Image 1: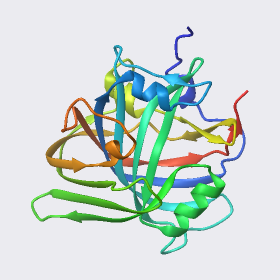
Image 2: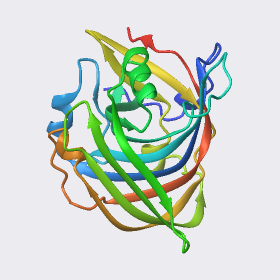
Image 3: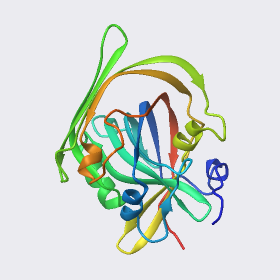
Amino acid sequence: MQEPDRLAPADRPSGRPAGFQRWRKLLFLHWEVPVDQVAATLPAGLEPDLWEGKALVGLVPFTMRDVVPWWSPSVPGVSNFHELNMRTYVRHGSTPGVWFYSLDAANALAVVVARVGWKLPYHKAAMSLEEEDDGWVRYHSERRWPAPKPAVFAARYRVGEPSGRAPVGTLEHFLVERYVLFTMEGDQLLSGRVHHEPYPLSQVELDGCEQTIVAAQGMTPASEAPILAHYSEGVDVDVYALEPVA
């Protein structure tokens, strides 16, 4: 088995990006799930990327800003929306990446475009982010279409002290510094690259998290509450076109 290269995917790909995005106010929450449950969901060519023998799934609620193709300016009402993705960590040979189980978004047009153009399992959801006077933030999402449902997420959190970039070799780096996504079109495995500066991380205090997103995918997390929580104010992202995986 080839050892994954954790650094090379962070290099800027050659060629022109297909689009640009700003990812803001990201909350990274993680649960341990059975390795066999993850392995059973992956297409041929991918295998679970494990941390100390454990499989992890993440829920990442955040806000998309200025989502545009390379040839277009930002469009009010279309380019900015809340999003929540469920992902796990995979590898193709020595290339580590992410596999998305679901991506809930508040913008119906973005959902349709991403399902058709990017072959990703986007879902329309009713979503909100409320910032309270004392620094606490409430994030809520409830999936509308398509199934599987119910798929609800609610969390209250408060951002703490900055902790900087995740050092290479740490669990934080393993989880957040991912620059390759994999998806399927028919029987063809595809990969897509993104490029951005390493995430500036902060500590985060979590005051409750209820969700049915993981169960909607038929998985049973080892604990009700997430075992890890991280936060980032965000990064500016170059997005590159999907390519077939040989």
